[in-house]
Every structure is written in C-alpha cells, then in structure tokens.
Length: 111
Length: 113
Image 1 (cartoon, chains in turn blue, purple):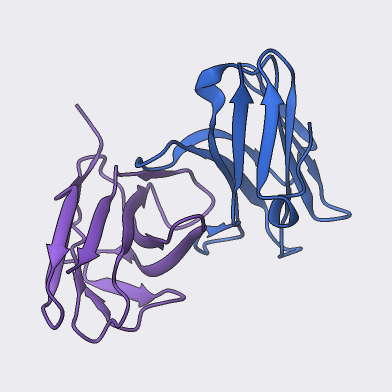
Image 2 (cartoon, rainbow over the protein chains, first blue to last red; image 1 turned 45 degrees about the horizontal axis):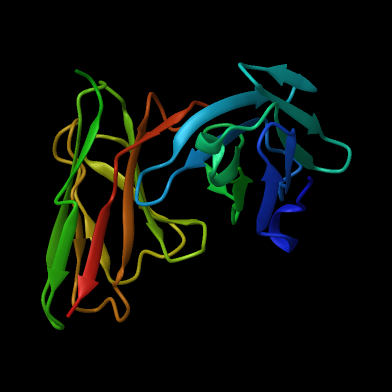
C-alpha cells in the first residue's frame, strides 16, 4: 500500500506486506530529514534519518528514499508486523534551524 | 539511565489558571524544544532553546512562556492567555539546534476542566 502524506493520512496494510509512507517536504534548502514513529499516547521515536547528499539509506526493515528534485521523502517498511501500527512523521531541517514536522500518516497493520 | 523526562503525565487545569509542565534531560544536550499536538494532527513548535538563558518563539508561542536557567531543564508554563490549552505536550532535546536527531519525552496530556 502507499499513502501520499497530507492527502491520505491513513494507510492500512496486510501483515507481512511491505508499506510505503510518503512525505512532501516544503523547503528546497532542507538538508536533513528524519522519520519518527509515534505510538498512541507516547512521544515520537526516531526510526531513520538521511542527509541531502544521499538518495537512499537502509536500516533494519526500513528504507528511506529522498528525491530532492520533487521534494519527496518516503519510508518503506518491509514485512510489516502488528507492532508497526503507529503514526509516522517526517521532519526536515536545514543548517542550524529547528525541525519542522509534517502532519503524519497513520499506519494500521491488518492481521 | 539517560533520557528526557516529562512530568506529570496527566494534568488538569481550571480555566484561568496557569500551569507549568516539567521537562528534564540528562543527555547533556544543548537544544530543547516544546511541541503541542492536537488529536489527529502533527507537532507544532511552541518554543525552543539552543543554549542556556536563551530561547526563541516557535510557530504558536502565544499564551505560553518558558525559561532555560539550567541546561538540563526547560519548563513550559501554559498561561490563562492560552484560550485552547487542552492538548498533548511534547518536550524534546537534541545535541545542538541543527541537523541532529531530536529525542522526545513521553508527553504531558493537559486538560482544561
């Protein structure tokens, strides 16, 4: 399944499938991006980050892709598990400026 | 056990009262932040501080005040001037106020009764 950030704030994916969460960022000068996961009633947790001199970065079951041409960031989660159900936020910053967060996408894993 | 601690977890305020939310970190981070989160929405920046005794307004600072007298502490006061204070408040810190990961506390849920 695939979401388009602000336009589709919810995404439902079958357990075991791959999910793709998208984020359109606003500032073409942004040079650092982070994906956070927030479970209900808790603070956001860091998942993965990427700097603007990279197009792709991989972690454990997660991959972040950065397309600076169209100011687009995506988070791919492989083999989704029930524990992946959460709200996912992208955040951007540049230089010494504060992080700016997107609205978020709610991911629901269907057993 | 390093981390960032917010207290209390739940807070109730009567209309017209000021309340102060606590945020403490032992990560030796220079930068600290306060965000507000409303149901089904993203994080909006209230105030941030990149160094002791200095802080800047974020996008929604009206009705809030902060202080940064110590590196490890960044309390947020929600004043009576904040007309709609019921929300989930998140504190975060980072090594410095630039392109580095921010670590979040577990949040304080404030309800006006």
